[in-house]
Length: 139
Length: 424
Image (cartoon, rainbow over all chains, first blue to last red; front, top):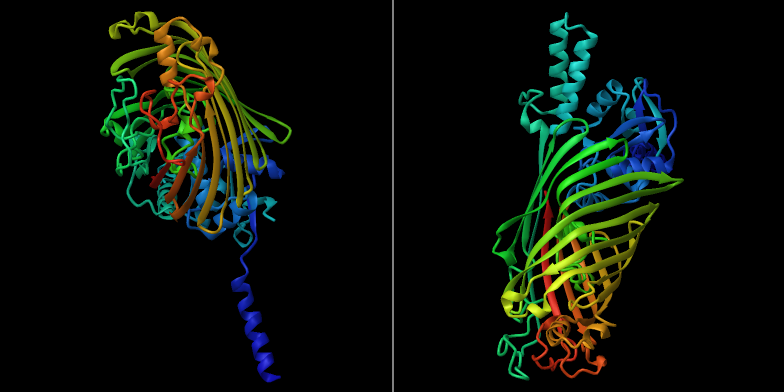
């Protein structure tokens, strides 16, 4: 019984490390955008930019090797990083579009979004600052 | 990274506006903080050309050969390739070729301002001894939101994948199905296009129209003939709905070719109405994909009518994508040309007729993001055009363009390919 209790304690301690924070789509607090549909989000990240709520917005990406980015694309577009790379090869080399601009990490994403209401990005839920608002939760 | 620098500088500049630049110290601090965040390190000025120009590239190294160990015959004494091996698409033999599939491309994108940009893409193909040629060179201008005009050299949108045919990393095959992608014998034009992006409900569309001309030097009966396309115009529509996307295209041109240098003035083409169309669809849910396409070209000349199509499907298992493709092509219904009393037209039509069907089995493996390796075997069957009841028709599909080569003895000639693709 004692062993069991210890085991449960260890499990409770380790559990938060294993579960990744939910990924949310965010904009700066001053952005006029208040909601985003699944198809709008998908289109935005398949085209790199778009118009939402009447304003032109540009999408931002976390670095290629970032786990949050992988989870975001799997949930929002249904594609792996390699598939996205192949998709963008089609777009870039035919001049049909450019991928979202890439920032160096969560902190840069926060700063960029807080300072520019025409940018849209995604972050782990626990990285959402008071200067940001959540538009969409990746299921 | 460079782009984000530009943005950061934008932020830094707008921040300086807010601070009225009176507090120079805090602006400097902000800059330092941002540059530390971006780990950019080196200082760049907002007018630095590296902020305005980006360079992207693609490369493929491929090996290919077929398994027909037989030389071409000389049935009626007029096969210029007699005694030589059968050559799939005029180039691949039963010896390994390191050149046929190998190519490299580099693309320069320059931002001129918010609305205008310039793009130049150079391509060097192994089969052309890596002599570089310009595939894309255009100015792109956003006329209004969602409508872009481009002018310069553009790749032709003949079929669904035509405009990225050289970017191996963009598709699952080592080579696009020749039944479709071997139909139209030219790939670029000089002119302009106009593209309109719009949505209807949850469907997104890209409607594009182009207009231009082309001059293509091509080998015909051992001599170089310049094929001229004038008033080349076309329209195409790409639509996407969730995991499903569709493609429709139509194009038209006036085709001329002067064959008098060959002593074949009677076979010269004068303003023939050449028409092409294509329809395709792709479904890809991230794990399973299905792709199908049909393209046809009707040159209204001795260059025979031809259609081609394929159905391809694959399933992704981790980093592996096994796939299977069935494809067919046929120059059917050219009785108008074959019954022509012009013997030159008749002979040229016979030589350019193609009939073939094939099964392709392949696997793509992701070595790293932006790097893959592919293995593929394409087995052909039903390649004889003799159903037109002409004993001198091409009976070897894409393995020989001579009607005098005799028939390949093997039932199922197979082309093998290995390719390594990268984008950077």
